Length: 117
Image (cartoon, rainbow, N blue to C red; front, side):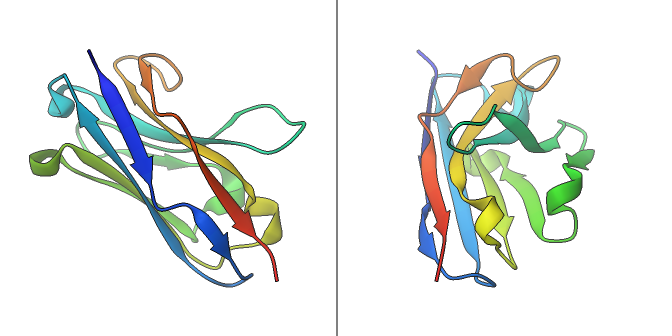
């Protein structure tokens, strides 16, 4: 079956950086678009960034210029580079593999990102 395994979360100070990774198995990774979502305590899950098979990216306004989504099809891996982190970026981040629209398809288990001094 399809599995998505995330890594790279943790505690970081404001202004710091983290890179999240998500490795996919059990399917042909290059057939899918990829996305990252996040959910803060007591809030709904929101789309952070998406990247289509053809390379089109889309970002939430709150992360534009700070976060970068990318993928390496040879490694079946997607990434989220997060720079200039803010306390409001604190959330559980989940990777998503989809065909038609972000939020469909397959999900990772989530990784906690905490931005605090």
